[in-house]
Length: 246
Image (cartoon, rainbow, N blue to C red; front, side, top):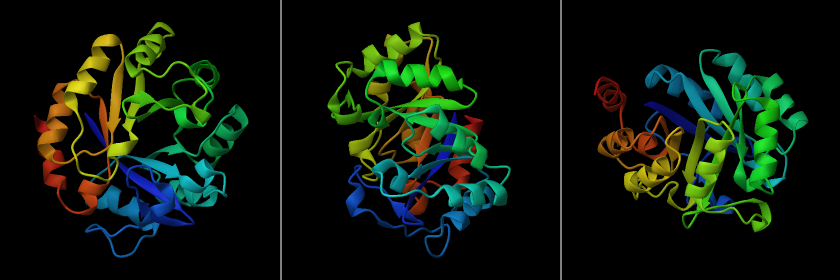
């Protein structure tokens, strides 16, 4: 299972995400570095944790208040061995193309930024799975679509539909758990993978301990998104090495 550290960027700094309540996010405080420079954080992930990929959320772009495209580009140039998976609220192939040109390895197609599953699947098919990855953004265990306009909200149903369309991996992000340390629910993941046995999921939201990571791995997660437990030192590089060995 791949552990993928997260960098949330707002107004040019790395911030601590909490329950998806973006207006309240504050600059990170981390055992990994001094300050909240997203470039330095990317370097810390690469050199201190040995990470080979990072998930980057451009919160300004997602909220429609600007973008941090230049920072994504600088990050890709400074850390070429760190594959960047970037959510910038894209809704079109042109927007995705600009991210890829800036140095993103993959563009995240987030359900909260798309009007429906059909729209998300069309964009994902246009970009291809080598360049894009769908994120199922959950609130109260239902898939959140832009403006709540889609009838397809059950995560098991969405996963099964994605499987029939030929997709094999997606992100499963429980937004209400982000930054809480409440623990990710491996049993919930198990129900979704049962509904779509040909798919695997990168899980995010509330992952608490190395033991929680192992539970997700045993439930079939292909990866995990991690931030708070890395910043407060609850999960260390040694924990990640033991997870790889198990």
